[in-house]
Each structure stands twice: as structure tokens, then as C-alpha cells.
Image 1 (cartoon, one colour):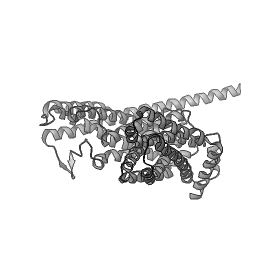
Image 2 (tube, helix red, strand yellow):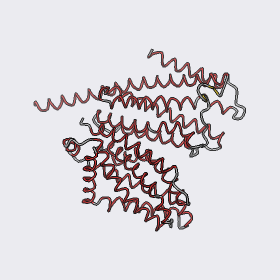
Image 3 (tube, helix red, strand yellow):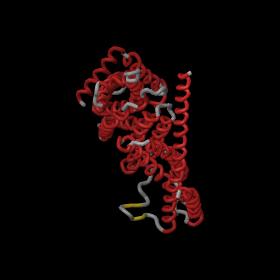
Image 4 (cartoon, chains in turn orange, blue):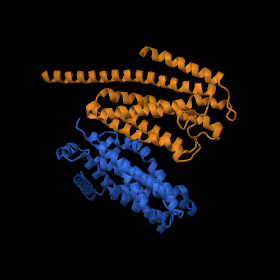
Length: 235
Length: 220
């Protein structure tokens, strides 16, 4: 299963690229720029809901005394790190799309602004993780930070409804499971969501494994230092 | 919980009254920020009046970061946190007490900054008075957010640089809602939904802070 994640994600991305660039038709009004549809929403879905949702959940599980375990802290850290990459790509592809469609790279629209703030909040989280501290103290602080930053996710989600800006409202599913787009465009869009989800799972899996090894190395170094101090005391 | 909140609030305010850090450092910094903004905008009264609402909240935001750093650093010296734990105080009460003390200090800073706005930016004093409920909601939100993030960085070697990075994005909604609400009031309207946004934010952060503060204060 673990070994299959990497090749599966590469294959899914390759098929999405093929469908998105060669099979699907250009849009009547946006022309070929519509092909960003097969990248931008999928990146946003992974970053906003999957990555930061998982980070908030694992942080809550760490803070809850009955479920407290270092693996939740490491999982939260891994998902935030990968989530920040996906969110950066979301903003970048949004800007690439905004330039030809809106005429500007960036506008102070509610969706864009709240997304940029979310990215800054999670960059703060990553900065906090690099502050030298006792692992348990750091884990608690970061868990609180992840939950606080997660408060911005619903604001990002509903921003297009609360404040009417340039960013369009929901465009795939409207009123339940009534799709607004059809044919090859719909299937390619749905495949892009699956592809990005698998890529995310693969990246988080690899990062989590690395985080566990880093933690083991740090523990071993601490153990060695304690033994050295004891040996000095005996001498 | 409420008794502990009053106790901690009184302690923080007594420390402030004795040390006068707010009076001699934070308030002058806020006024200095306003003056520098005025210099950047130039002498045009129209420009100054147009920029006044945003600059008021920006100056208050920057000053609140200093006040928050100060509020968190009170608990940092060796043994202070342990002493508070030994007293058996309710963590939620400690959070609410510290937030209340910070809110009281921010009220003083806001009052001085508004005076500065009247003098340097030529805004209408009567209209500014109408914005008071909006400001009270915003100050409650600033204090709740500041106290929570202050506790997150307390005791770290890099608290001074890390706190602004963490707290300013979280406070950005206060800046937006405060600016929009104040601008609407100064233009002759009411704060409208912006006061409600700030009130919801204050209540949400006070509730979350009361729940989570204990996790930050747990012994290692």
C-alpha cells in the first residue's frame, strides 16, 4: 500500500495532465485558461480542508489527555508542512488565473485575503515548531496554534457568500449533487481531486516517516548527553 | 473561575501601576506611530481624515503587540508559572483575568490614540464618540487574541520576534472590521455589522481561550 502511493500519484497526475491539456475542450469565454480548473480547485481542496482539517483534528487529539500521543503531534506537523506547500500553489495558480480573467495578479477580495492570512497563520505555526523547546511543551503550543489557525478555514470557505467579491461562488456542486459542468470537463475535474488527494497522502506519509526518525534521533542524542553527564559525575 | 479572574486581573494591573511600562513605553510608542503616519501622509487635511480610521487601528494593533508582550512576560520569570499552579487557580480564570487586565490597558491606549486623532488628523470628536461600542468590542477581541498568543510564546527566547508573526495575522480581522466600522461612523453612519463581527470574534476567542489556556500552562 505504502509503496503503491508514489507510483499511483504520479500516474493519476499524468492522466489528469493528459485529460486537462489535450482531451478537454477550451472554454467559450476563458479559452485555454480554463485548464487551470483541473489544478487550482483540487489544490485548494487539499490545502484548506484535508491538510488543515487533519492538522486541527490531530492537534485536538494531542491536547485531549486520553488520546495524547507524540504521533498526533508529528502527524499535525507533517500535514501543516505539506498543507502550506499546497496552499502556496493554490495562491500561485489563483494569481495565474486571475491575471487574464480579472486583469490583475492580486485583488483584496475576501476569499484571497482570508486565504493569504491562513497561509501566514500556518507559516507562524512552522516558525513555532523550529523554536528550541521541550518536545511536549512545543507540541502543546503548536497544537493550540493549529486549532486557532483552523478557525480561519470556515471564514475562507464562506467568505464568497458573506462578502461579494471577485472570486466566484461554488461552481462544481450546487444545491446538493447537481453538477454545473459536464462531460469530459467534469470527469477531469473529479480526477484532479482524486490525484491531488493521493499526492497529498503520499507526501504526508513520507514527511511523517521522516518526522518519526528525526524525533528518534533527537531522543537518542538526549540519551547520549545524559549518559555523558553521568559518566562525568562518576569520574 | 470568576473569582480567580478578578484576582489575576488585579495582580496584573497592580504590577502595571507600579512599573508604569504602559505609561512610559507603550502609550508613547502608539502616539509616535500616529505621528509617523501623519508625516507619511503629508499635511493635507482631506488625506489625513480619509486615512484616520485605518491608522487608528493600525497604531492600536502595533501598541497592543507591545502590551501583549509585556503581559506575557510578567509570567515568564523563573517559578512564576509554578507559583500560579501551586495556588490552584482555575486556568480559564487566569486567562480571563489576564485578558481583562490587557483590555483595561488597551482602553487607555485607545483613549490616548483617539485624542491624537482629534489633534493630528482633525476628525470630528462627536462622531468618534459614537464609535465607542465598536471600539469596546474590538478591544475585547484584541485582548482575548493577544492573551492567548502571548501564552503560546511565553518563555521562549524568541518571543519578541515570534509574537508579531503569530498574532498580527490573527488580528487582521480586527483591523479590517475596526477600520470599516470607524470609517462608516466618521462618514455619518453607524458601525452596523462590523461591530457584530468584532463582538462574535471577541466571544469566540474568549471561549476558545478559556478552554485552551490550561493546555498551555500544564507542567512538562
